[in-house]
Amino acid sequence: MPKNQSTAAQTARRASRSGGKYTEALRSATSSSDTPHAPHVLRFLAERSGNLYHLVGGIAAAWAHSGQRVLLLEEAEERWFVDGMRRSRGRRKKIELAAQPEPTTSTLWASPNSPGVLVHHTCMWEVRHPSRESDRGWPRRDRSPLEAAMADALGAYDVIVLLPRYWSYPDRESATAHVVLGEIDVFPHTDCRTVLPGFGGEEEGVPLSPEQSAAVLRERCLGFLFGSPHLPIALDGVIWQSNWKLPVDADYLAGIDRDMSRVGLRPLGWTTCERWPAPHRQLPELAQMQDFNFVSQYQLIAKRLRLALDARPVGKN
Image (cartoon, rainbow, N blue to C red; front, side, top):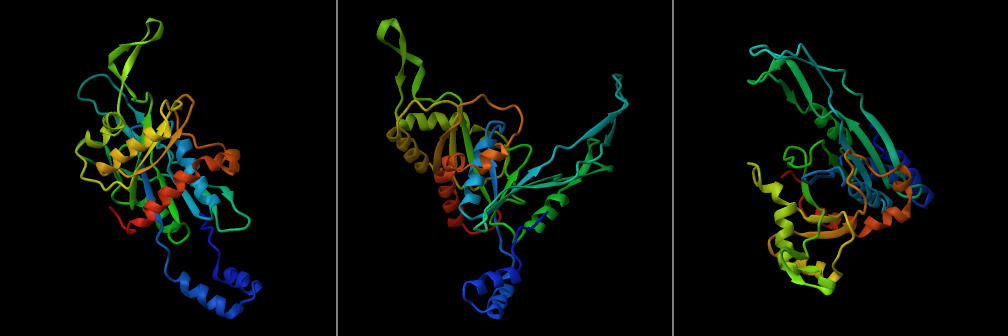
């Protein structure tokens, strides 16, 4: 994985061109590079992820365009060969690993005038050991590939965004921060169980207050956090994405944010994604990552999220 980090000599040369002394700048750059910079390692949490990759990609691109070094570290799909499948009982399936995909690295965007860079690295996060089976006959595993990728990125990036295959559970081993992405299909601004007569014989739902809407959103979109026996996890905020145009105004959303803050969920922003949910994981197109008009849509949320990350001590949950 390329480290995308200037060497001490390159830093010193730039300083000398700005009027400083090369030897002093080199000494300063060398001493500062002895201690690797500990990046924020961010894990987004969501019940499903297919329609959220544009949001995550937009936030990462906004960070890069603001001069930050950002790594999208994605988990590659694992491949299996299942041999000897038989319907008779008592016969065990022979499970073998297919050839694992090679790690791939691509630079999605790099600033010509600042350290800002956005790199996408895909690799296997786990090693499977077919010769060492668990009690249920499945291969044992360890996360040494992910640990190696993280170690390689130490000091090279300001933020590492983990993109696992499944987003609904936290990562206490690698992540230093967790942020919830709440995906809204139908915005709960009216009560669908109670209706009022409207114009032309139509029926309208009884309007909900922002506090009532906030309670419904927590139940609908954040229920997955409480549905399995996970240990408590410290959440650093929540970002809401509506898959349709929001039917309420900014004051109404501010009321929801206040209620979320009341229960300990730090609101980081609202966004819309008016398109059909994607069945597969897909980051924004390369041209979009490089287009400032696309990136500018996510600048405010990216800024708020970075402030939330900087406000907490860098350490594991």
